[in-house]
Image (cartoon, rainbow, N blue to C red):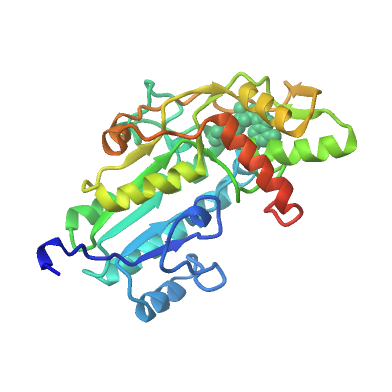
Length: 311
Ligand code: GDP
């Protein structure tokens, strides 16, 4: 084979491989948390010593929806700081080993009070929403560290990706701790079995850009293959919908007719629209999954796997 056309194969490790994103990603190595807990730096060191790889996708994190963030802000800060810091520290201890690292944030870490739409350069332009400040500041610090590592240049490209509201099969369907779509799927299942109405927090008016997880898995492949920059990248299609649209789709798929909007429960941030321009330059006319197909797949996954779903 002519060496000029020989494409070097990368060897990829995914951390957080059993979570929503990680379970959909292709990888050569996917250590479980029992094998490598990123909160334990010695386990990471041992994994680096024992395995040959040059690419990392880090999906590990302590994540949750509005409820979990509000009740656990301090713990969300400490655990996410620790995981990022430990992994980056070991990458720094091994200069030249890693070519590319992708690290996950979320658009909820952007300033609460910012000119919309959100663009990558506005990440540090003000405090995050109080409801998730622990998670948000920890994730922002991960991005700061990535910048500093990129400045030094010995640790490969460290890229922060910032998806909008993710959902899909293998989500955490916890009613208290989950994000809105999985948590409403969990509630809808329970409600349909017991002839209850579906209780939705807030008035359904907040807007979100729901992004289906299999689309993210495709996009990560494209980033690994083609993205040559180290600039953070928002993962978004830029289409906002009200929470009530997701509620209608979930009700349709589960046969529920009664929906009860609990206006005494928190609405969270009203909206956080993002600008997908940078991503679209990279992925061209990629066809995103519709909300209705995505929710249908997620509900089917829940039904087929119940009770063995994360909840
Ligand atoms: P966020 O996008 O970071 O705010 O996090 P979530 O995915 O938890 O979405 C929160 C939004 O969904 C708020 O507008 C909530 O009022 C609304 N919501 C409605 N019902 C639920 C629910 O059962 N669980 C959650 N987490 N949010 C809900």
